[in-house]
Amino acid sequence: MRLLASTAILGLIATGLTAVPAQASSSPKVAYGWAWPDGKGRLRIVPRAAKPVTMHYGIRSFALKPMAGAEEIRLDYTSASFYRTTVTCEAKDNAGKYAVSAKGLGKTACAPRDLAFVFTLGPTLVRIVYNGTRATTIHQFWAGVATERGKVAFGTLRYLGDGTPDPSISGIVTFTPEGGQPMKLGYDWMVGFVRVTEACNADWLTRTDPRMPDEEGVGSIACSPRQMTAVLKRLKHPVLAKIHYSPLAGSMDQLWEVSPEARQSGGS
View 1 (cartoon, rainbow, N blue to C red):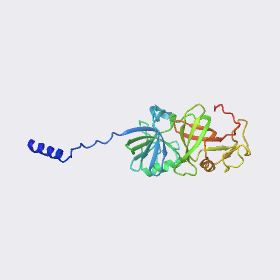
View 2 (tube, rainbow, N blue to C red):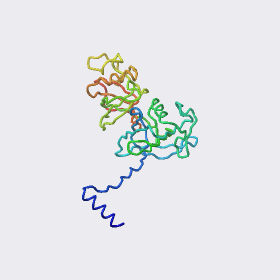
View 3 (tube, helix red, strand yellow):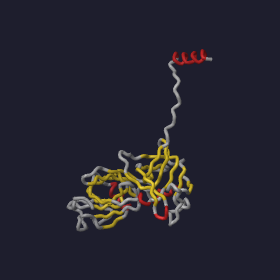
View 4 (cartoon, rainbow, N blue to C red):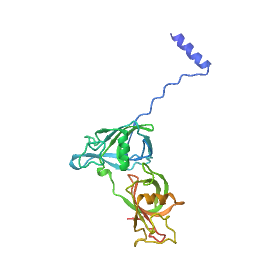
């Protein structure tokens, strides 16, 4: 038997072939954070550090913090198990009733199509188990203290590309706050847009545009997310702006058009 094995090995060497051990699949990884839609059956998430906490009425949740060096992950969720914190898969919100485990994770078993529905409502807080580029298990968890106090800042903004599921009212921008580093932010149908120019559909202001700024030099005319997206898509270069944003969620919640004479000492 040993002689036959040796002969087989010599034969492989002689023909230039060698036996290669099977590669073990990568170990599953876990990410906590705000998941955003990234096309049909796909999501994106920047992993955050998560600490278990007890919220009102004894509901368990997670407090999130930034993770040094964390980069955005894009995953396919079409075959993932999905568990919601609502008592039904079709609910738009919790309505005061929670299906949450002792570990703070959603318990209602749903399907990937239900996550696609959740994404139509906006980004959602999740714990994701993934392997490579595929999510295997996704649990929602209750926002609780994972939600954050938003920040306001002046800086420069550039439109990056369409968001999903509706590119006409969602998108992705880069924003560089004064004295800070560039960040990628998403927005959806809930974003506010406040203009200096009189017409909501006009291009981003120039020095000759009619202006309606407030005492701070920023916009005072409320416009829609659809109008904002149309304006941003026509930008040819970064523009001065003031925004309200949530760093942990990676979201832009409100955008103010800024006049060239605006105060640029930063937001409060």
